[in-house]
Image (tube, rainbow, N blue to C red; front, top):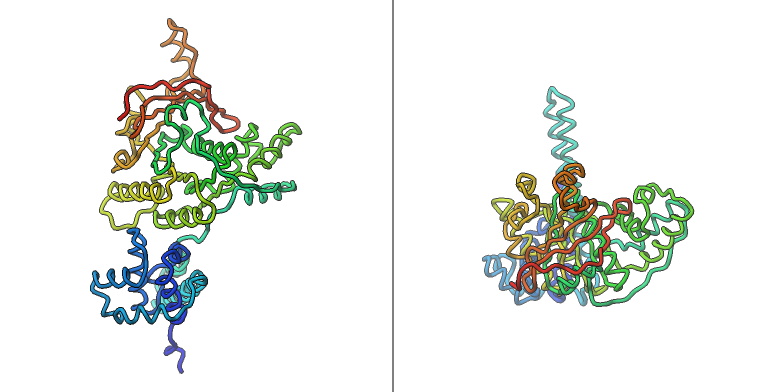
Length: 462
């Protein structure tokens, strides 16, 4: 057979085995949905069936022969795929779903090879064009190969213990052992826990602030305190920072040492002992970090559900909301963000855990005389306020008023300059009171500490 007559790479048996696995086990889709798309199937019939499974998964409907047949019939594709009898045939191809991910990886690999061949064809066409600008032609060829690589990253959760092992290995220190446990969840800040009643299961909590105010720091502190003091199991989706950067911040906060020294791996003897003690504590913390930089709600939901199945989650944290990719089917970013927040609320209810989503605030905060955030400042707000059970803002007056100006304005009252003091403002609380709690930001170790003050309730239950 001539080279141009060769069939494109494919494996029909793997496609059939994967679809059969999905039809006999509703949970099998969790093993493949993060990396496999309908377009990865060679057979159009199989692509249609997988798309039906994917749609059912997105809407929370269990996947089985009946529901898939109904979905295919709804989209007028049931007869096209061979009817219910072909679905029965697929079920008969596999005795168990245990190898679903293995079959899925085969389908994915064949898809990549086909796209590589297509990229080669495009590159050949660019060469035959013999354009006058060589750099432009090379750029087009590189873009063709780049598109083959432009699949969502297959990185997954990594435990803090594993990251610490790598950190210690880099500086020649022995790793510590890990641990386990489970407890009722609190933020670790008495005033905030008094105001919120702790972090309630199935709540979507928005933690918002302007850049450099400390929203990521507070989210990491809550994760660390919950895992260390209560042995809670925490899933952390870090869309902006790498897992290594997250753990370096946690190490500095836990050890209460200079963050920059932790980042460089250089310590005085006293600090080195504190860091080694902190690595032992954090190595036992059940914190799992996914630092995939571009991730959508389907992937977040699937990964969180799988970790919950394996470890029983207590808390999900996402840093941050505006970096989550939408499905691309919404006309505006506001509509897209509304779909994202609804998906996160669904995740909180589905897993029965609190979900904390860090969020940016709009620049409107900077333009007002009073720089305290309000609900209208939620950036690209959409339905954030509507979907959230709790909205918390972080406000630091020292970020807006210089000490000299403060002293001039408060000379008569003699109030001390609020350096590194932060107000955590509970602006919405679906099932409790509003109010604020003061915390102190510890600059050198990048953490928030409690001032042991009672929360000041300002408002009634709403």
